[in-house]
Image 1 (spheres, rainbow, N blue to C red):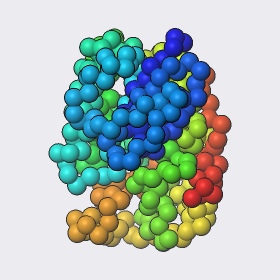
Image 2: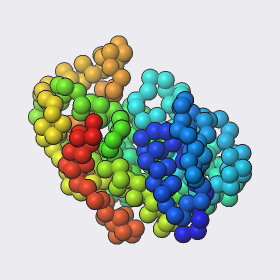
Image 3: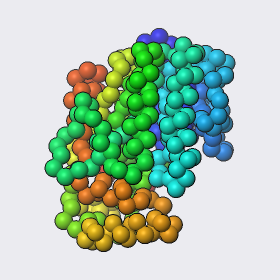
Image 4: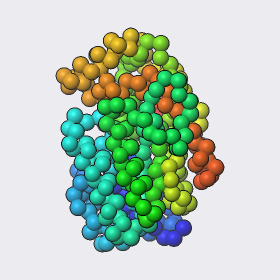
Length: 309
């Protein structure tokens, strides 16, 4: 792979920081521009330049100034949002502008971290493959916006090369999203009778997938997940918490009401199927085509995350 000058958006987030760290250690990396709108960004490193900017603002000048040839687009509002306009601006509209700026600057490749939640969580489904049409949960904007952003990037033509990495829940030190925050509740209510298998991915395996995608330059969609699964009802034991079964209709009403009253901000009721039905993804394509294989099982990833918290 030729020497790389990379832009990482959402660089101060969990996945963004992990990506910046991995690229900074890669001998093929010439420079990393780490962009985020958060305050108190880390200091610049030997090959890392931190820039405070909003991905919704015009950033085309950064591509020319820093001679960017590679983009890892991690900017995304990962927690469910009440401000639908802001969420769409960051998740979808900014992606379209980023692609236009990247194409104008002659960027050669974009890696986009998507999510296996684009397949939805439905009764009776098996391992999802990349050839399936996405079927996100209605009203769950996190997944709906992922589908839209994917289509913007993949329908943009042959240049730049676009790789979409559909990941399951990524865990590691500092990981924080709506599923993990729910699992860490001292008492976790879950739909009575539900015990879906779940997949988790350690952050080191995630960054390895990003690195391989950049090296291989093979466009397309790739699922990434830890080896094996862990059952929902085994998670409280692994995390040292307690699970309490609640009838699904009642739990749905409680989640919906507490969301509307702003008593909790983890998820609206539209996300409940994610702990009721499985949403498992096959990783055969990336293993066969890019040679990626997770070093950590789903159960081990959860164990290591729990120990690090």
